[in-house]
Amino acid sequence: MSKAAPSRPRTNRAKRVFCIVASRFNAQYVDGLIDHTTRELRALAPDATISLQRVPGSFEIPVIVREFAIQNKADAIIACGVILQGETNHAQNLSRSVTDALQRIAIEHGVPVINVVLSFDNENQARARCLENKINRGTEAARAAVEIANVLSELRGG
Image (cartoon, rainbow, N blue to C red):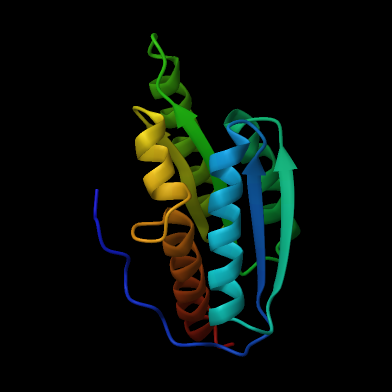
């Protein structure tokens, strides 16, 4: 995993729409991702509309992401969840399933889906990447969402 966040894309005053779909499970870490994502989106796209939809757990995220994709109103959708490894391989199966579903939705519907459903071996890793500032994955997600929304807008003549 990278230890440095990607550089900030240019600030864009376009009327963008960003949808965040976030798990309630492992709320402390997911809330950190949401906070960092929202803060960075507001800095990079100050005129954007940002909506948040909470779901019970990471497994439910793709259903709501798909619904947003079908509505075709979002410039990018950001999926936020935290999966902590337990004593079985359930976390690995869950992570792969969610990742595959999110990628399929993005391709089938032509809407960027930024996957911030993160799997960690322990809470120290989750804390560093969800709550702290140095390598916060929420900040990275916002930067990716703004950049891909800008690229698609240019390609689509917007």
